[in-house]
Amino acid sequence: MNKNILVAPLNWGLGHATRCIPIIKELENQGFNPIIASDGVSLDLLKKEFPHLKTLELPSYQIEYAKKGENFKWKLIKNSPKTINAILSEKKLVKELIKEHEITGIISDNRLGVRSKKVPSVFITHQLTVLSGKTTWISSKLHQFFISKFNECWVPDAEDKPNLTGKLGHLKDSDLEVKYIGVLSRLEKKELPIKYDLMVILSGPEPQRTFLEEKLIEELKNYDEKVVFIKGKIEPEQKKEEIDNVTFYNFMQTEELEKTFNESNFVLCRSGYTTVMDLAKLEKKAFFIPTPGQFEQEFLAKKYKREGILPMAKQDDFKITDLDAIWLYQGLPKFNSNVDWKKLFLLFESE
Image (cartoon, rainbow, N blue to C red; front, side):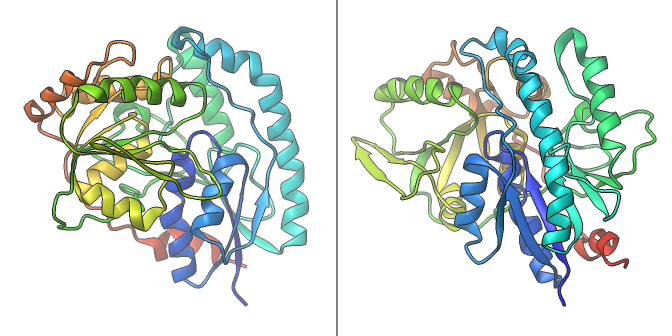
C-alpha cells in the first residue's frame, strides 16, 4: 500500500504552493500518495493542479499586508495572536489527520504547526535567517527554534556559491539538520518562438497585489510592445481579456504558464523567492519590484541589483522606462536543478 505523505504549504502569496508542485509530482513518481493540506488561494491552486488528490483545509494564518510598506512588520505583529492560534489549531488538527488518513510522513512548507513526533516531519524554507530590521536576531533565533522541532529542514538552493539566497538560506554555524536540495521549480526551459516582449506576473497577499496591478496597468499605457499580464488571482474560471497591446489573464495553471514564460522576452514581477527560482530555471531576464516592507523580497532585489544580476525599483518609484535597464544586467546564474528525490524521500521509508 502506498504511504500517505501530507504536503502542507503556507498560504502567503502563491510561492509556497507552487514550489510544492514538483515535490507532489515526485512523491507520486516514487510511489507515495500525497495528501494536500492548506487554505485559501494556495489550496485552490493545488486543487486545480491535482484534481485527483485528496485535499484538506487547515486553519488560516490570516496574514495581511499593510497598505503602507513601513507598517508591514507592525501589521504582522498586530496579527500575531491570530497566527499563533492558527499554529496551535493546526498542530492539534494534524494529530487527528495522522490517525484519520494514516499519514506516514509530513512535508511542511513554512507551516510551523504541521509536524509530529510520531511520523518523520520535514520543514521547507529558504529563510534560515528571517530579516525583520532591528529585530532580525530575535526573529531568526525564534524561527530556527521552530525548525529544530522537525526531523529535517530542506532549503531549495545550492549549498555553496554561487547560490540564490545568500545569508537568508546559509548560516555560518548551526545545529539544524539542513539539506540543500537545489533550485526548485515546476517549470522547464523550452525553445519556443517569442510571442510577447514583456510578461507581467503578479502574486502575494492583498492589498499590495492590487496596488501594483493598478500601477502597472497605468504605466503600460506608455508601452507599445506586446505584453501578457497575469494578475495572480485564483478564481473558479480562467478569464482572458485583450486591451490594445496587452493580453490579461486572471491566472494560469502550470502547463500554460510554462509555455507563456518561454514565449516571453523578459519578465516584470515581484522578487519572491519562488519566482526567482523559476527565472533561474528558465534563464530569463527580469525586472523586480519587491513588495513594500517585505524585508526578504527587498533584500533579494537589492542583492541581485548590487551584484549586477537583475535590476529593481521600489513600487512607488517604478516607471515603465526603467525596463530599459534590463539589458545592462547579466541575469541569474544557471544552476544544476537535478534533485535526488529518491535519497530525500528515504526519510519516509522507515517503518
